[in-house]
Length: 254
Length: 254
Ligand SMILES: [Ca+2]
Ligand SMILES: [Ca+2]
Image 1 (cartoon, protein in one colour):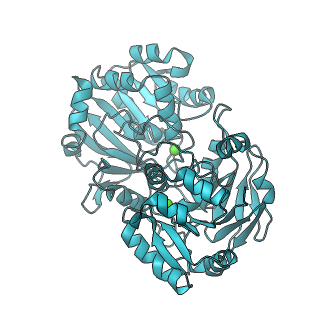
Image 2: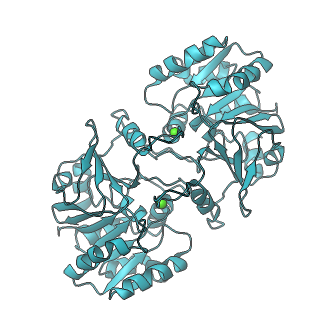
Image 3: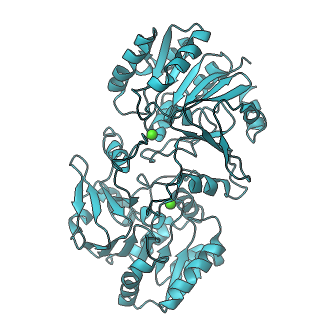
């Protein structure tokens, strides 16, 4: 098994930056390392695939890459031939449902984990890189056949992680309360550790090494432990090893 | 078919009030009209059912009602005998999954729509009174067998509705954007109108009459129309009639 190359962004938009701009050098370095010339873009998190492709293409073109939309081809053939995959943000449920409907969940997983092609995810595209989408912020506007996702890493992600606002009068659960609720589920529900990526966080996975980069700290929720602040440049490789999905993962890949 | 009696609260907690206190007279009037002495409490939206029952019981006792926990009995028998049902808030996915697991979804629906027993919902308990939970704010921490819910009313609810914060630098979708995304889904996805209940809103349904009460205005999202502000004391009875679920509803109840 080749080692996975992942670049997982909390979001495409960050205050004060153009679309994807805050991560420009990260994305370019990441793709250049693998000698990529064309990126397969997956716009399934949005309703209008063509409009989304039109938004993403000039950004990657400016950086010197061609972009193909998975929806303009046979999706299975497109994934089989892809040099690199970028899965954009939008609605995580719509994204995961469409990945299942197009029958590319296992195939993307195989291309990334066995084929070693680089995977970039942003927001919903980062959610689906995790074992499950249990920690998305999105509304469940469509019903996917499962909450299990690409399982490229052994822990879940909460993108757009937001700190509690102590001045707010709103009584809905904070992001932290929602993640802690998840970790309080009884043992019959398998749960995962959760990395909360604030907007501007980027998680770099290169084989068995994971590093937090970008322009914002992350917050880590290990089940049964108090949440921890994760500063930029932290090494998070330990999160890639021991996990409750190991057996399941081995079964799938055998 | 008897006419439904529903009291749907956006939330149990409102800034400046004790638990359920802002709705105290609404709840008492609502239960007294039907001569209720004991309320069946459904704590399935929380992990710890006993702790939740302990929190709710003294509040209802103070108002002169006995409370029984559905989890302390055979749930099916408990629903069959219930004089009134209160479904509390917490996590909507956990609530709906447990309602399905305990096989009480159709039974509660029947008791409310045919038997005419009063139904009080708060937050997640209000979400599941709708046709689907597509517009919950909660994290999908468990996987229910369907997003279809009790379908006691023909439109969806977004509880804890929150206005966009124009000063925020956060780039995650606003509540309004999320609901509009839902309404932009292509025609193969059946979608519902959405009533956004701000904290402190209560929706009173008495047969074919629906009135907005409480201490906060609501916001109505009719598919294909601009969102509308709904002031207190508005008559929303028109929402109870025409809807995309009518045929489905007639089939189920025949
Ligand atoms: Ca999103
Ligand atoms: Ca909730």
